[in-house]
Image (tube, rainbow, N blue to C red; front, top):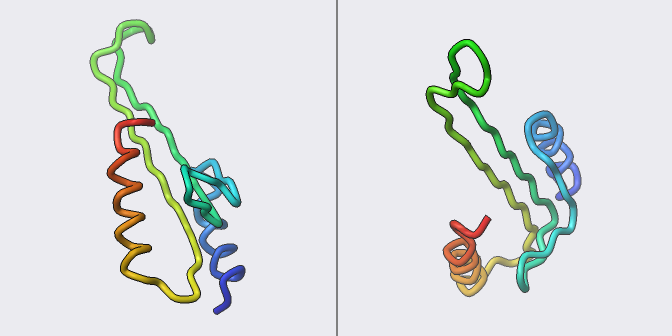
Length: 88
């Protein structure tokens, strides 16, 4: 399966729950696709301002094609993830 066909299948599954961007840049990294989902759930009594509890979920999906993946690429991506966690 070629890259574009694979991306189209993946994006078709993500499109209902994620905001999708193509060719997104984060720092020095260029991703072929980036998908983001931000969901808030809450329980309330009687009216919406009387919230009992609430929680939020943030999910991110990034896709990048490599002709040859090196150890440096993997280490660099891990460092990118570590530096961005909590900064969104």
